[in-house]
Length: 367
Ligand code: ATP
Ligand code: MG
Image 1 (tube, rainbow, N blue to C red):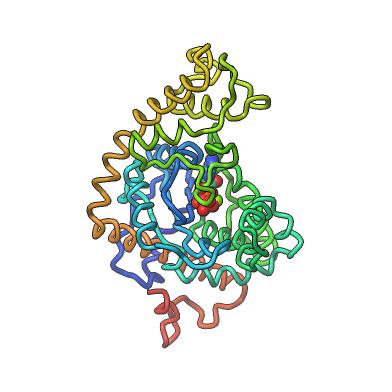
Image 2 (spheres, helix red, strand yellow):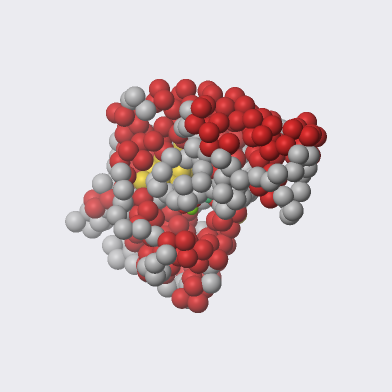
């Protein structure tokens, strides 16, 4: 597919004319779009589930766009929390992991209002029954111990706007996000059927570890407080792993059904070392859970040492981190404004013939 943000037409409709195009020569024309909620620091589940894939794709020459889904914070809680610090920490963690800001776009949803306008036609394309049967949303509503808010019910549609607004074609995510990517595909398909083709149907990209468990055996999640944070110190990492659930059998074996917590630790080690989890189990042998946890601690600390060093360094320069966000949000706005223009044209809302032809300057609002 054609890439939009380098297109000269963007410059014509772009309300932020000073933004230089980023290099978007891509491997196979793929555009990577994915994101995270700024609800806390990233953890090993992010690293293995999606972050490593993002970095790999970037290294393969694909442009990567990362959405910091700040409006999604309030889907399941009251208040936004220490959002500013959390957003800066996320950016530092992306960069420390290898997301090069010169070849990628990191933006906050709230800084790109055009995406919220895309939401309106998209909402018309799905039924409440389809939204209500989304298993991830149901699980999140249950975990929040409150009644489902309209935002929680509809956030997968916002996410479709985030992805399609950037013309994403490949979405590296964890397993919990599959229903959302499926909904995005449905919305793209229905929009195209109804109004003419504007969107490609993006595909989800899973890693070999798409559902990392936390130390309590449930999905590792910032909200559950069961994580191994990327930014933990080596001692903190050791303490967290010591408290991880396991079982009392001395012989370590890889059996995800009968021994899920042990299998999870083996899977984490294997993913970081490139070994097979069975090999790792053999290596630990009769050492029991204590030896497995000690091995996992060493492997995690070793694998993250450089990331942690860069993360700490980056966090001392908030001006730079803010600049990355500002620049990324300007680029994302340029793309989203153009997509919105395509959508409005397809829907017969191009009242003035061409983008930007209104005396009021219809895109001024997106500055
Ligand atoms: P929260 O508890 O606030 O929802 P989270 O830990 O679930 O936080 P998200 O920001 O919701 O993290 O997810 C960001 C991305 O990371 C998504 O693509 C998601 O699928 C992936 N991800 C999150 N947790 C895991 C995990 N445990 N294993 C694999 N991928 C994960
Ligand atoms: Mg989540």
